[in-house]
Image 1 (cartoon, rainbow, N blue to C red):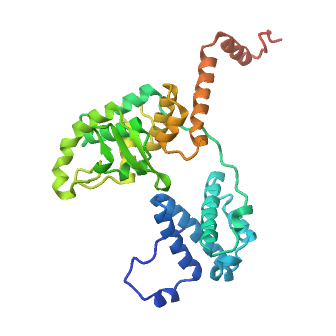
Image 2 (image 1 turned 180 degrees about the horizontal axis):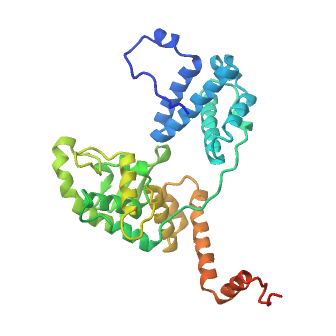
Image 3 (image 1 turned 60 degrees about the horizontal axis):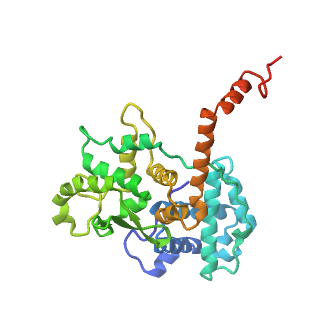
Length: 338
């Protein structure tokens, strides 16, 4: 899919000149991207939504160009035609993600009064593959926290970064955006801005506070350059770590050691929630700390816990082991095979 590039990065032009080489659809798309920014959608979400809508615009240009000048004329058949071109080229999950982007776009068109009705209301979406959140066993998570050390360029920073992910369950975008003003070590909490510009306060772990105190003196050499409210995690040149750099750091330490494992920042968030639940934390409290808008999103972790319980049962319970052994040998319910 062709990458969407926001307009307006070149020399300033008059509105009339700009309008002359832009279709009404392109102008509307630019306004949609500005709306996404105002809603504090992540750069990745903005790029995905804009790219999907731009691809739909190219589809219309080849099939029914008149619809580009009048979004109100776009109908369900236009949308179904576009979505049908996606199947075969991508997974059902990816197609569903594109349908979600189109629904957001047309929902915005309707709510802003640009179209009288939303044609995506009857647009079918393929079922997403349901999978349980992937998480690390507690011993593996502990080994990961201890991985930064001799031979690493910034072990103090990296240990604090890993402890904040695992100890507070932050999203990658939340951690990357956090600054000094968000952190209150004395109170033992951090204030983060989550999805939909919803602010929440999350407790800090003692392990993070210790790692932070070790990292803090190394940050101070950039204080004069960056000012009182500088980003929490910095490169060795004093620049804020980007989302991609943070992801690389996490993957680096997952691949380290005698038992390498593929780790992502979101996997640490899942590990935080799963281990909190197993430790007896209330589901509602976990929902608040994760910043989930609905309890249903948090309840996925109860399914993880149930799956682990069932696996432990089958591995440890005598009757379950006997049943599995008999089944594997060709018998049923303990009867000898003929």
